[in-house]
Image (cartoon, rainbow, N blue to C red):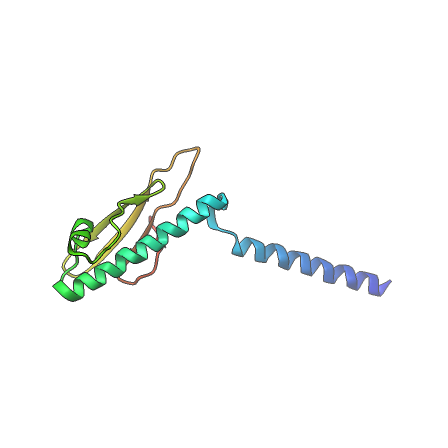
Length: 125
């Protein structure tokens, strides 16, 4: 009897651990696989634009707009957006911020993201 209770307790702990791991590793928002792919692409684009900002700043001593990054060759791919997201660069002489805005609808909620000189993609407020 004790072994059966012990086995049930261990099984319960394993199931709870499995559920918690699945929740932790599942994408935020619980979107479709295509939405997860799109968000990953947007985050990669933000990092690429931020790296182009760093390269531009190293060469010119200031940060640039998205159009300036493309025209100077610092940003090779001239994307202004991806799958419902549009990119915007807010730059000054000392800092930059690249924002991926999305047009959320009740049918398709989405999250906007940004990256700055910290090079860490974050959820936009």
